Amino acid sequence: MVPVGAWRVRTTPSPYDLKILHFIPVYAPAWKFGGPVRSVSALAEEQARQGHKVTVLTTNAGMTAADGIIPDKWILRNGVDVCYCRQEDGFGIKSTSLEKRVKDRAGEFDIMHLSAIWHPVARAAHNAARLGRVPVIVSPRGGLGPYAWQRRRWLKKIYYDLFERAHLKAAAGFHFTSSSEALESAQFIFRQPACVVPNGIDESLWRRNELAAIDWRAAQGFAKSDLLLLYVGRLHHKKGLEILPATLVKVQLAFPGQRLRLVLVGPNENGTLQQLEKEMVRAVSPGCLQWIPTLPAVALATVYSAADIFLMPSFHENFGNSAIEALACGCVSLVSAETGCFEFGDGCGMKSVATHDSDQWADAITEIFKSGRNVVTGNERTKLFSRVGLRATATEIVRFYQTIQTKPKNI
Image (cartoon, rainbow, N blue to C red; front, side, top):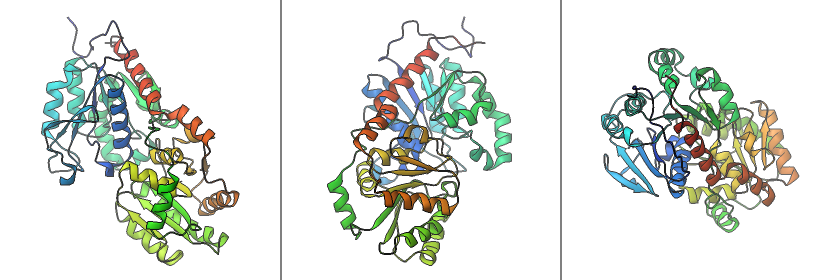
């Protein structure tokens, strides 16, 4: 008799026959929730292309009528079976339907990959995996980092002691997207195996399109000589965007004969956009700032191609998808030292700024413009995809699943 808490053991692993369950509270096309939605959906779809049976249990949080999602109905999305369980009103993301479905279905799978740190719905997933004897791989996606702990610290401490610690201790293994994330999370894992695999980038999707970029700039009323800076992601305090007005004032002084443009793409949170607009009008010039709430991937690739420099001045990023996407589309990326993906973008057109000082950011931007090195070379792009190509990263994660799934749990 196998005790509850031990998982079923595969004796003849094959690289192309796993039944994989991804459990995540929000999923594509709920792009407004940021990088994890895009990275998890890309991973799931690539695993399906590689021949695995991939299922996603999630909620309809962030969906609109235009998305055509019917709650609690299964759909096939890009080769992946997805059920968008109905979200219920209340604090956070709640879904009785999601909890019931994971309880009913968990035992059917060889592995559960969970991207849901600090989410109460994840408790049902952990319990279902334990009862179904299914190993759980946890991707914290920044949730165990120091910045995450600073938010509602005392509530997190209580929740950790009551629930999350036991969940992490019971996990079969951990997936981290960068070495820095693995290092800052080390105190919260309990000798389980872990892998560092970056979020994968689809080379066929994220690529430079010069003609589309020229047309886009013209449609926005941007002159060819305008210096275009771009940020893509949530407009939130964590992203360090408040440094930009003072930074742009200093950059403008270095290029008095040219217009600076700043384009922000992403959902506005906590009044961040309004504050930036006020600062920009006072510091730079009216019309300098343009905000786009959201864009599909193909359109976003065009905007990356049109930009001169991509900026990510975040206080913390376990990875930083958009900085890598920009590189893939040929746009040099300038990131903070707290951005995890720098280890993969270094030497591929990505540069780092050590502090959040506006003088240093202005100097770095000015140096890139004056050097004329604001386009990623073909060799740099090739090197980038050797590190973060979607096919290779998905395969590496599957191999990690297999090393876990072929070993019994230590009771």
